[in-house]
Length: 218
Ligand code: GRF
Image (tube, rainbow, N blue to C red; front, side):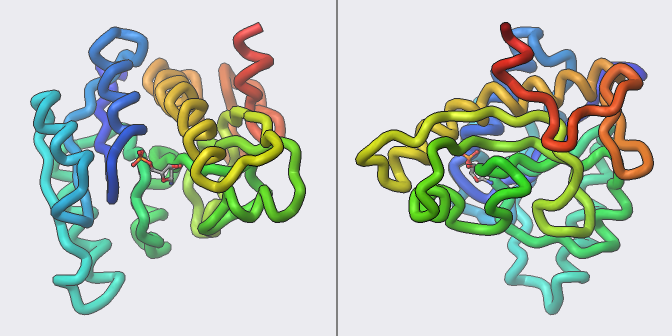
């Protein structure tokens, strides 16, 4: 494929978006972030996009009568940029099956837990409360099941005595910033595919939990 075009969806500070922008600029990610769309007008990530010279817009979900209507408008706004890949980078909205189907195989999410553990919210507190000794993050293809699509790559961090959710979140976020550019790079290089509900990297199925970041860099 010609140079990969990525549209990023955000709701917040956009530090994962920043990692992707930086990787694109440095050449580590052979792709262009062609647009950033937020469902919140005040999202810090919109400023990051502007600083990087990337077109950015907010589409407020509260202006729509239903989830379907919002997703339809979002889909149209995204398609205008002809993306090869759509990345959810801290996008805090549940997407409708129609939206997910439309972007199937080219829609990724980053989730701050070692999926399948802790889909949904408050992942860090839940991991601490469960007495887990490690936490982490997962990049996965998006399917209709919330945080349930096939994992592409996971990164692990230790949970240390005295950790609270904020301390753990900060540690996990550092791993997130390595994971997302890597998964996007694989996709941009044409090496990563979703096929029959499984992730293929270089035509080989990835393990059920996705590739393990630490193993990869050894
Ligand atoms: C990240 O922890 C991401 O995994 C989760 O929301 C957070 C977004 O952070 N879905 P940021 O906006 O990328 O800084």
